[in-house]
Image 1 (cartoon, one colour):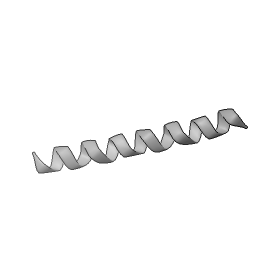
Image 2 (image 1 turned 180 degrees about the vertical axis):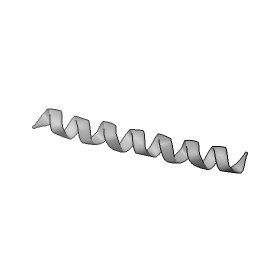
Image 3 (image 1 turned 90 degrees about the vertical axis):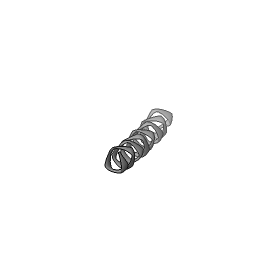
Length: 28
């Protein structure tokens, strides 16, 4: 179960990075 929680946190972090990257790219 702890592994699943860690995976969920990692997934949310990746989504956040992708969102920031897309915003940075569109503003450039």
